[in-house]
Image (cartoon, rainbow, N blue to C red):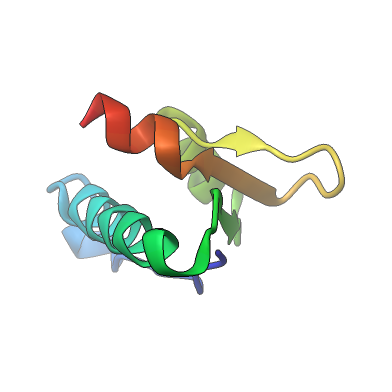
Length: 80
């Protein structure tokens, strides 16, 4: 599965909003993956800050493209 880019305005950064939005997107993807047999959630980074954000939240950088990250939905669901 692939999600579109999301951003948090500077004045809202550091308040947990981005984390909450990401968690919601991952949880929705987990539910949808049961219907379409998806295993990974893929995101594209739009900045170095976004790359750090995704890495911090358990995504791994895909070797194909340096700005593309993925998280294993099955492992994430098992942890949460």
